[in-house]
Amino acid sequence: MRSRRGLMTWRIVPAGLISFGMVGCIGLFVHFAVLAVWLLLRPSFLPAHIVATLIASAFNFALNNSLTFRNRQLKGIALLNGLIKYLLISSVGIFLNIGIAYAAYETYSTGPYLASMVGALVDLIWRYAVSSQFIWKTEGT
Image 1 (tube, rainbow, N blue to C red):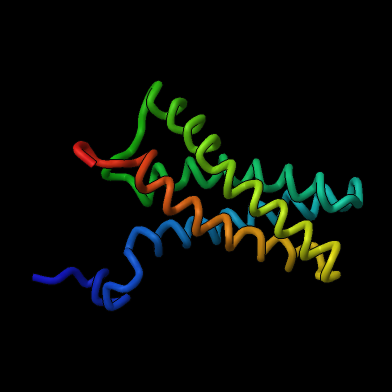
Image 2: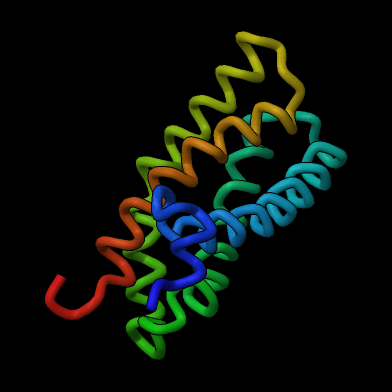
């Protein structure tokens, strides 16, 4: 019997990516809340975006561990090791996110929220690809 989750996306988009993306959307709220508070206190986009990205990254890791990858959920010391590994592996996406967002903000004069959204989209794709393979992998893969 076919999975309904696979049929909803015609098996073009992996169901895990959809869940990962939904967690990412929730993480965007965290990101934008931190960004807004930081910009109110110190109106400087780059440090605000960096701090918001790092806080949202840790939040997304915890939520993905609980929801997206619940069948492979990390616990105990594996959770801490997974977070460190996640941030190290995700650093490429984080740097892309920050660089693209900064370029959008400075070069194309987008607002801080649109610039953050563009950076986050690139980051989402990178993180899903590496996380599903290196953090929450199944045994034998």
